[in-house]
Length: 562
Image (cartoon, rainbow, N blue to C red):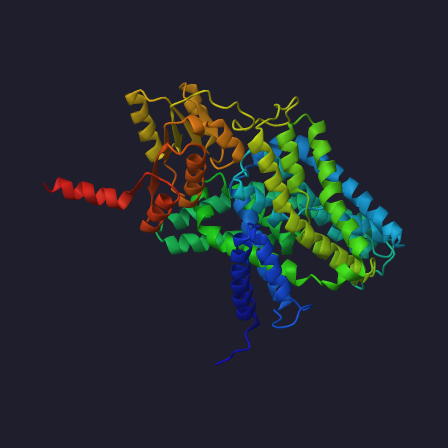
């Protein structure tokens, strides 16, 4: 049997070590990402022992980026993207400009040329897709106003980076490096009556326009039709395969045909599919693979890190880290506030962007290859990425704690987009009430029963349309994740009589139950579960009554027998 299998070894060792160190990190109350990065360092070429295939790890990580952006596109319509353009476009461009200037300043202190400083600064200006989306998804904020702005901002940054990556090779000589041997079609540029640089820029713009037009005109009809056709076959296996084929196929095809990034192609594929009623099922089918490959992304980042750079160039590494986490963050915060958004929105956006990732690596590696920047620049970027990714979850934790202590924040003065109803709402004035979490098929029946009994109640729901409908009926309702500290403050769990968890996610319900019991030990908690393990878990964290659908159905059918 052939045992020389670098692909299997990279996946097995990478995921296995990431799992072990992720559990250790969680045990010490650190984000699991810390464990994933440490796993990458341990299997990288700069530490003793097993060395994973770095090239394969990067390609596997790219699959995670594709699936992640496809999932975001499924929940992010074209209307959402256009609604935040007023803040996302100038905000992203302004923040890129600030970070680039700061990077050029640091490069100047190290004696690098203007071109090297420009590319180095651009590498520090763009946030990581995986890190940003992972942070938003953990807080279930992708579909809130904060999430829409952050994702729109990210898309603009990606577009800037796509153009940058195309322009760097023909501009290499002007930037102080060496021009690549395969300079693109000077004959075509001459026929257009422009120089090679402007010719490349025009061709890139044309490709981007053609890509967007193709996705909005052809893809908008073809992709949903294809998925609906497969759904009618009744085969879940084929449906899952179709979703993966669409996500990976469109990402790969768009990169090869139009020169855009895999991430951008996958995002547009998801966005055009979002108009289909099957979009939620498609998102559900890609979730397990998305999470697994996202872990491999962090492992691949860790593999790039050479710990010796911390000892050899400590001040340059610290300066790079501060540009990423402080310079970018402050710039984003001031820009968002300048557009009239609340302190809460500005802090979330600034924390989301205070890190760098995949595009930064691609750009700096290309610049090293073209001799635009020295090899040390790559080491600084990787070190800055590692440190910023480690610190980024702590920044979010700090924001959560601030708003747990005081749920403050004014409404936007000049909103550039419709506010999510959950943003900055006043706490409830109800006491001795029932808190109903989830208003789906189960929750809606429970609310009707509470109303019939005359029990004061409020509802927490994640579907904006449902919340608006409930408010129209005169029901007090809140939009957003139930586990956010700011949301818990609004529900007055300390003064509540009942907590009813009608959501199917046992882990999310468990965190809510723990918070409710900590605030009010006497609150009566009723929850639903889908397995005996979930029942045991919810009881362990404090639920007074846990009902499992299959068990209650069996009891009812047995009782019907007489």
